[in-house]
Image 1: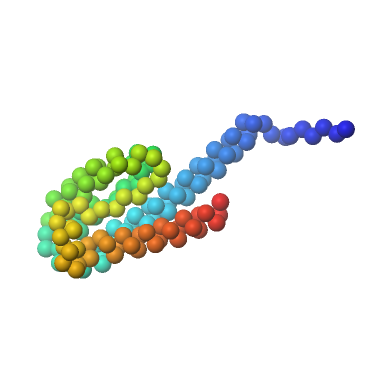
Image 2: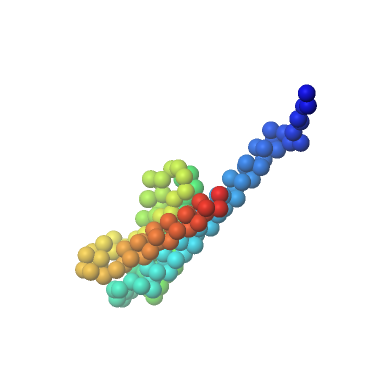
Length: 148
C-alpha cells in the first residue's frame, strides 16, 4: 500500500488562504474607491442646481469603512467660499460611520442640511450620482465575483 505525503503543512494552507483574503479585500477596496471618486466627481459636475456659495458642492464626499474603521475617504474639498459645506459633509460622515460596524461600507453624502430641500425642487444634488454609483458598484462586484 502506497502512502501519500503532502509537500505542505497546515500552516502553508493557512498562509495561502490569508494571502488570498488580503488580495480579495484589496480588490474590494479599490472597487469601492473608484466608485466613491466617480460619485464625488458626478455630484460636483452633474448637479443641476446653482451653487452660489460653493457649500453644497463642497459638502460632497465619501468614506470607505472596513469593520467600522475608516480606511479611506475623499471629497469635501472647498469650492468657492464653501468652507462651511466641507465642514458639514465631514460632520455628517462622522455621524454615519458609527452605524456600520461590520463589513465593507461605502458612504457618500451631500452634507449641507438643505440638500434634500434642493432635490425636492426637482434639482439633482446627489440622487443621480447615487444611482450611478450603485450601478457601478454592482458591476464591479460582479466582475470581482467572477474572478474569485
